[in-house]
Length: 424
Image (cartoon, rainbow, N blue to C red; front, side, top):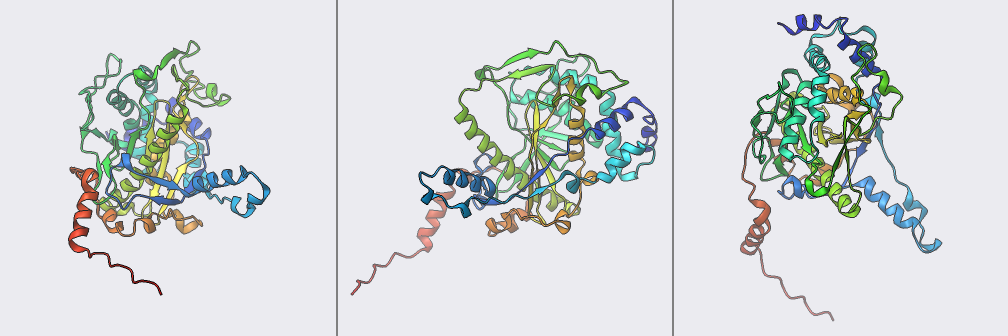
């Protein structure tokens, strides 16, 4: 059945009503326009060893130190000004499409919108099934199982053709979906998710969605972290005649039929891990965007998303290699609401995954945005970044002996230091 004919079967359906209601309730997130103060993009290191210092964070820390000065003489008010630039939701996203779907439904869609809209309608049709599958995650399972269930029952169904691949280097990756749904047992697709090269930041994404969006797990609970699972006794089946109302007046948050409770100890260690995780996701965002534009030049000018994914939320970063613009969604996007999957967030993730339909191309042509500074900081490697292709496996041996190799070459090509002339 063609996409157009299949869409016809959803006209006037409950799923169409749910989509229109969820789009009406979308959270209008802001996006921080990030500037990089310093990074190690010139070093051919893996994503896990990426080091990125964001300018606003650096300045904010400096401001706090100034405010903590012992005396007024040490306080320099001019040094406390920190400038931030934000991109508003209606600047990044094509709200005209959102309004058209809310006002007129799916009856008169443009051809290029139809595959994406059909994907979300199919997900909404089966959402209770996927919700139950996602809620069976134990919270203490291994990373491979979590990845498989998240991609099989959430991300892949939000793209046309359920297009995804999981890193084939993942340990203990199951052959079939490990959820507890009796009729699932879907075969898990795995393959090469390599990004970058031995001249640039490099590594493997946990998941590649739609052949152009990288996803990394940023949190995978383990038995050592003493997590517990609470069952929400108030969880009820959604009322299909009024599918969103239960969530409208509640705060969207990391709550689900099975909530994860975490120990708040070791805050300092968690803060360090959080910083390392953000550095890794930023490096992956930039590298993936360059590789996708290299593979598909038509993507030049788009802000290409990358996700960091946890059990209960995602973080979203976007990078445009042509205009050197880096954005990060200021807020975490919650996956769960108080009565199951939080559908406005699911629709938001769907819009990110179909960014060529829902976001604005060449945003820097219309707004005064700050450049991320990556082009300047990586200028000696910029051509290497522009040449990288996704999905090209490599053996990253430079992480261990890069410096020793360079020092040997320096010794062979260098000259002995001369003694200074005596001063008279």
